[in-house]
Figure 1 (cartoon, protein in one colour):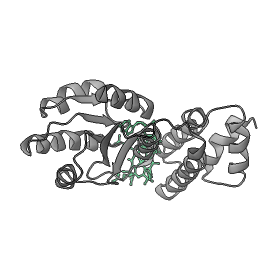
Figure 2 (cartoon, protein in one colour):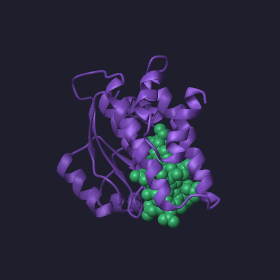
Figure 3 (cartoon, helix red, strand yellow):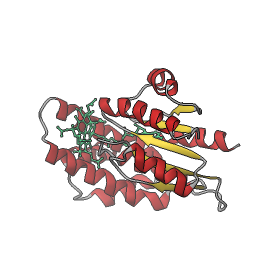
Length: 213
Ligand code: B1M
């Protein structure tokens, strides 16, 4: 199999046998982010498709997620880093009810490598925890991730709770079930500050940079 197909296959099959040697080979010709956004993401998309058709069970999807995480961790030291002083602080969380964290952690890596101070609160983070963290860490912006359809709705609830707590910091949102339209209508409607939708981690970085300039 060609290298890109082999990389996607590790994710689909949930196996690490040969993964790191192939990642080394890929690094010789591609930047780490291209490897993640290309073949590894293709593998994850295929996992989602097979899962949807009941051809994979949750335990298998979990193994695929482990491989994806291991690959991202292996590539991370090879990513470009810029800036030593902090450009700003962001608190980041996957919303209440949602355990998906690969995309969120990618956002963390990319922002942290580009000079942001990221406080990652983890998964299933309730609005009260977020509000508490805003008071404790005094961030410049808040990042919310969520992949389930119900997580998009949870973001609306969270934005509304922020509003009642007097929080109007820039809110960066992302995740598979979200759209720009939903963000600008439903979420922004419940919030007093700016709400920005990022389709991927790089777009998240672009917006974070713009906000701090
Ligand atoms: Co789940 N899952 N899952 N899952 N899972 C999806 C999301 C699903 C689309 C699969 C499917 O049915 N085809 C589906 C959601 C359906 C829906 O609501 N629309 C689904 C389901 C149904 C479920 C369960 C309910 C299954 C069950 O138990 N019956 C369950 C939910 C549990 C819960 O959350 N309460 C569940 C569980 C799991 C696992 C635990 C097994 C595992 C997650 C492991 C983990 O994250 N640690 C898992 C996985 C791996 C997936 C798929 C296959 C892959 C997700 C992923 O990691 N993608 C997914 C199908 C798919 O997306 N193709 C699926 C790679 C990652 C890099 O992309 O997170 O989208 P993503 O992040 C992107 C962008 O979205 C964006 O940037 C990233 C790229 O740069 N982004 C941001 C994300 N957050 C951002 C924040 C930002 C900016 C950009 O700023 C703050």
